[in-house]
Image 1 (spheres, rainbow, N blue to C red):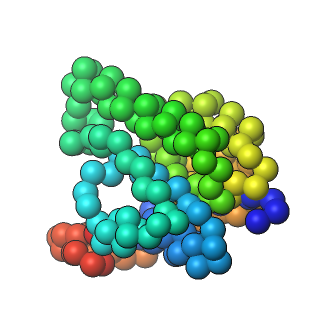
Image 2 (tube, helix red, strand yellow):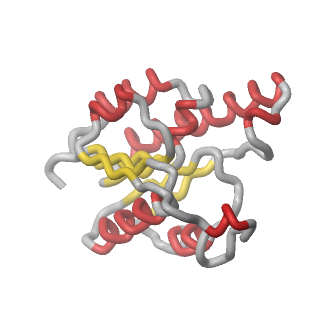
Amino acid sequence: MDTGLIHIYCGDGKGKTTAAVGLTIRCVGRGGRVVFAQFLKTRETGELAVLQQLDAVTVMRGEGPSKFTFQMTPDELEETKRQQRALFHEIVEHCRRETPDMLVLDEALPACRLGLLPEDELLSFLRTRPDTLEVVLTGRGPSEHLLALADYVSEIHKRSHPYDRGIPARAGIEE
């Protein structure tokens, strides 16, 4: 790739991570190398099982939170912030050292919105990243600053979802 652009997949609908996985596979299929990093997620999912088998994909995950931030004690919240920031710094160093073609920051948007990942650090990285690095951000609630930097913004809206009817996440579909 000559020029790396920024993608945002956002909204309340299902499919943001799935779209990022699809773009990852497209990039690898054309000989690219991808770092696929996840914030806030702790479950092993079907897509991670496949991505981890691909030599051209580096999966990076930190210790995700064991519960929602609104359920955390102040100490748990501080520890989660420390873990998510450490993961981000590890990702940045890896990208500067290894120069992949694409970086996926799955759930980086809510990590910023919840104050777990400093948005100013993310913005700084996006502005100073290698010129050829394509970046994909996923999650709900991107800020206006992030939207202004993005070259692609795809918003996925939920019209209906089985979870609303009490159907839990199913292996191979939602996880």
